[in-house]
Image: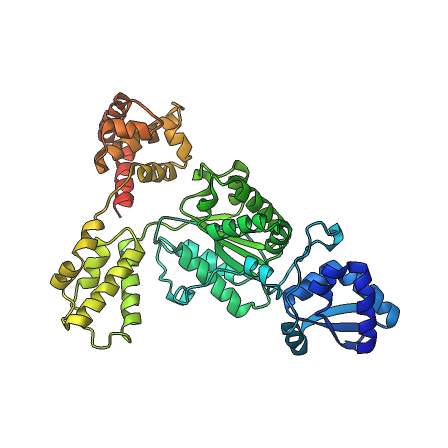
Length: 468
């Protein structure tokens, strides 16, 4: 087939697909060559090539075969001349939402957005932080499983668990792992379409698509990625329209065996404002909890940060025991820990003083005060539920069977011992119970810990976990 014949094929396709589809998808294509019965067609990018192959491939092949009977198959490739030619093309008009069903987007594996700016912005992934790579993630027992699962997904092998759900408190490494996965996939599998964005960005783009009457574009684009990564999914809880679209996008990708990676601040079952059907779907894969950091992990993070800052502060001097002091005192949030270290480096560099314990306490007085460990009733309930392998709702709920009543009393006892909450406040957080119920629970556990060694051991383990 010659390029003149390809031009004739294009004219026939114009009559079949209509002006809008032709301008958006067919016109940018270029015929390159034929080899072994395969016609190689140049596309502006892999996304457009895959889209055309899925939606117009059979139609194009029929017209091409009519011109050259030896052509039995089409192959779409990104070709330099095609990209350059397409760059000079005017931006294609939006495809109307009332086009024929067979012309609707149904792409399976695109790689990059087409050059339509509206579509490009809709699928544009959020920027990745260059610091958040696997090489700079410090692994310890609290995050070992999460790191291993993230590494497995980043290999882009067969999808073994879908979705991968990472959850934990603020500053424990969820976003770091999400970015690390995206960096790894972009580096080693550039052929895959990897979209990372926050749940807030997902919602914003969906609302924008509704406003601009481009919901079909939104649906088709987000349901054709190879790896979808949504950070802080708890943000869409209570937002019905966004939850509905997320649910259908989730199902479409799972049906195509595409990888989904999601992070949240708590386990799916504890997201009470999330629709039940979404919570159920989120629990069908691998759920990994990033536990609060322990002393060893915090010290390892600080040591790695010191090494990273050596180049920026070459003359830096630090006394023994400073890192150990910080790892012990700042235990709730890794971001606060890193920020404290950065402040110390800057202060030492500006005033020309060695970083000693005295300087550390002077420079970080406000952070050290704010980082005093504050245990919440909700945290106690969650830890007790995990320890006894029951649901959080059973701790708070009305059931009085011993399987739930004893852990509930343990949680009440720990809330009384480890928080400053009053008895009525504790009762309210246990399903609106009266303060006399809390008093009874506390006294019962005080009796049992003297009689039952297992209860005493459970209390000690839970106390250590909560105070870590």
